[in-house]
Length: 289
Image (cartoon, rainbow, N blue to C red):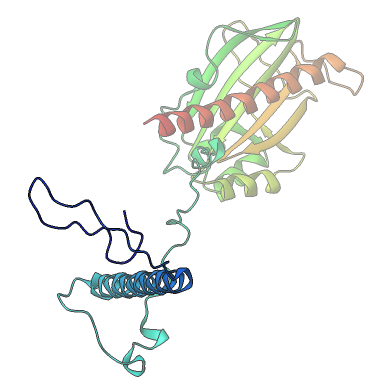
């Protein structure tokens, strides 16, 4: 086999053909090496050039895809000077979500509002609703309930200067009840007005001579009509309430008679609680309705 460019040379002939002839000339090894290097360089350049073309083709395809992403069929070929101004480019719409005002439960209804005006104070009103039962227990003391009374002529159930005070401030009703224990009796009078302002004026106008008339009956004799007795005056909402307490035997009350003072204070406190409960009941009904 020849290592020359032509390769082995086989002659033609029949069965008696001559064996191959080997060239006697030695090959030029330097020329062969240079030719091989030339071919390899050409192949590398072709490969590098082809890769660059492929890169350019891929970049163009990506550019077309990016430009046509707005849904148009053709890529834009506008120069940079015709691109939209920065103000025309939508800004980042990402931000906080919608805000909602904080909500809270409505404030509770004020019971006093319902007993401060005749328009709101609409629950049934009578002496036996303010003073129910047949007796009253305050702490360890039990008072027996006596007579009940109610009149629209407020001055007719008052003594001293109280009558004119009630009339001046438009009293619409005066309810009374008496409680007694161990020879001491107390009458509570609750005067009703259209609003809190009138009740407050009646309380302010009253003086030491403004006394509710004691109520007798139901086992309680006449008391505090001529003797010296202890009286109190107060108001809450559209109600002014008065007490007169003394001995059922006609004895005058002195500052040392603590039992009389305690009896009057107990009934004044109970009256306040009953008026307040009236407001609480109406506020609760309004809130649940």
